[in-house]
Length: 627
Image (tube, rainbow, N blue to C red; front, side):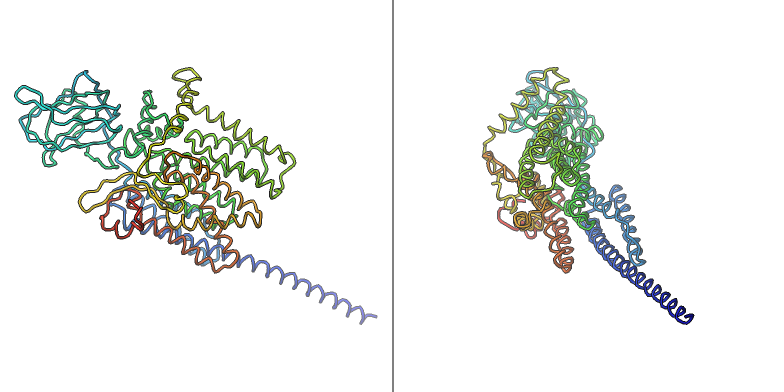
């Protein structure tokens, strides 16, 4: 009996040992799998950091200038490069790498791309107004001198015409006449003349003109003058710059000028779009005065915000840091994103608010918290208060609601059926309309009459309904996604050098986007999943309405749909990678191509001066590309 007991006890102990070994084996297998997944994630993110730092490094080598600001940014880039090196060390040691340097590198990169050559921080700030038959500006030289160029800085050109005259034998003779063609505002303009004189005058012959500075030169050398209005000659150290760097160009003469008028309580000139965009532009002017840098700066800030939102929206959709970083990366190297963030237009504000509105709508569908739907409505109201183009997002909201019914998306009972429509109406009509109306507070504060706000809306509608004049740069809606017809905002060529700012799409994003959108159509119909349908219908909501608009349209109207096309591209790559990990290599190669094209086209996106030969040989790919 004793012997039998001993055998049973040993058998029991052996069973326990075997069981413990099995438990340990399962643990090590599990932790080993986790470790392998952890190392794989680290490796992918590390490659992403290398890919992100490479374009910034190349930009600093190719385009940066040796000024104090660039040196400061270069120092910051060096610090971020050190963080990447530290992450390599952590990867080798098998530790979790730090994610945030990647987002910081992207934001720093975009800030450097946008701020380089953004605009002068110096411009005349004081102005003298001249009206018809209300006196003239007279200029006296120390002695009769030969003059071959006359330059002047206009503040606000209120459809004015003027005459430049010189005194000859006690008689004023006409030297140059300016007839108003379109409203030059806050920019230098130079005119070649040929006269020898000791006294000149500028007389407004039509309407009103605000002048900030006047120069006369011979062989590019300024001539000393005295003016009866000292404001016109009190900044001789200012550089005369007729390019985009020294003054307004394209529609800045409307939006930037109106921001100035809002600050100074003047009657606003541009009343064909809502108020909010101009109010936002005015914040930069308050910080950096009425200078090109000042009226463009806030757009750059919103461009940075866009990268952050793209990161979080991509993370929400795709659940993986790699694709979140990739979404932010592609936005950073989008041609349209850079161009629109470097000019005092209002589109960047509207596109960002629309994107945020959709972000909170998607969060609402995932978490089904009503407050998220209210926030989405608030941002839709803000977007509409920037530009009416944002209203097209409402079509996407309707499309998505219908899609939810088709795929029988599992909504909580309080949001099911007609309740979802009811809450949607409250959010996107009720809340959005309240937010939209509040942005017109300036009109009500000045007039105390709510009817003036209504009249403003009527005026906007009448303008857009009647705007049917053809334009050389206009293009049909279906051509935008193919990049058929870019639009040149500014050109200033001289000799063999070329300087321009042109809006077009990054071919690697646009042309891949065509395939991605078609793929989403297939997935949304075949698999009926929320993610694909949401992205596709948001894109179509911002794109299809232009089919029914008869007025001239331009490729920049497509800007509102571009963020969703980027998400579509990411969705397609995500599915390819899930199908086979071999697509990781192609995906990283694709990101490098996106960044390479950005650096290649950077001169015609930013106004960076290059040789005309470079533009013709390497950038004009098609006959219709007038860059």
